Picture 1 (cartoon, helix red, strand yellow):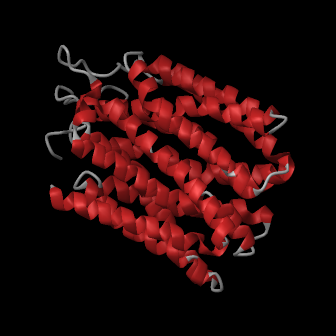
Picture 2 (cartoon, helix red, strand yellow; picture 1 turned 60 degrees about the vertical axis):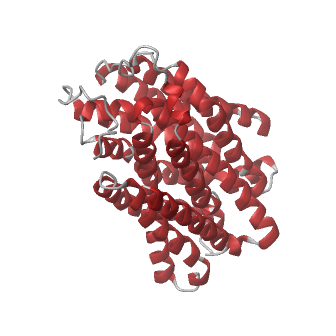
Length: 395
């Protein structure tokens, strides 16, 4: 890894109980990420219950993402000096309250408020947990540590979102949110009992401000690339449940199992990310974008052949999951002078992409039809590949 490592230079030895701490960060990430994306698997049922179109209900995804994008960086900078253990526990309790309110929401407006509350806390968690994991792991192991934290993302896609979707068939979409509220409380208790004291951000030179990274054009380019990558990813993924139901003729009760399969293969992507990201994050991004474009673009033409469709979904799932930690590490390396803020800005950029992807995907469905969605998403992935090649050429 280059000298612009993610950790403070003085942190050369792992802290005690490092593995346990990183594992707890991943468990917390599982609860947080499931809260954000559980709604994707519930969109068809939620839309029917509240009398909305699927595209209209999908704008709850846009609301969440825009909130993260706008409020994440200032909230993270404001809370950067707060001791991390208390901060993580407080965030999990906020998510528990948000999910409880979602379960009780009588209409779309209260549900939107609940989602807004959770969206305020999400980027603070990802930015600070990624930085803390990198600090604890030590120099040269930052990418590995962040990929371990992002196992929470993989686990959410493998178990959280699909099981929530399956649970909705038994207890309704409200019951799924209620179960998730209980999980967030449980994770907060585990952190209270087992997470050791984690320091806040490393001390900086007098007068040095985190916002100095905003003057670095290279860093800004990395943030914008993340926004484009996530636009490509979520143009199609936001409506994957609807695609499986309507185009692949998967029964509604089985969609959760398909989503679980998508997440299971994503575990391979997380392992791939941990192996390649520390060598060259930009080259890793380029490789994964090529896989993503091929997988998303192949879904519609392969709908008639089950095993080929499965292959396209495998390729899509691996690249999709791997791009989460790869983008996080890539941006944090570029903004090493303010790692927590850099990580949060990446989360904000990612959510800008999620918002754009959800909106563009919904518009594509209305204008071109659901069958064109994979092609539109593939086009955005190709644009991201071109941007990545330009950044590689300028290094």
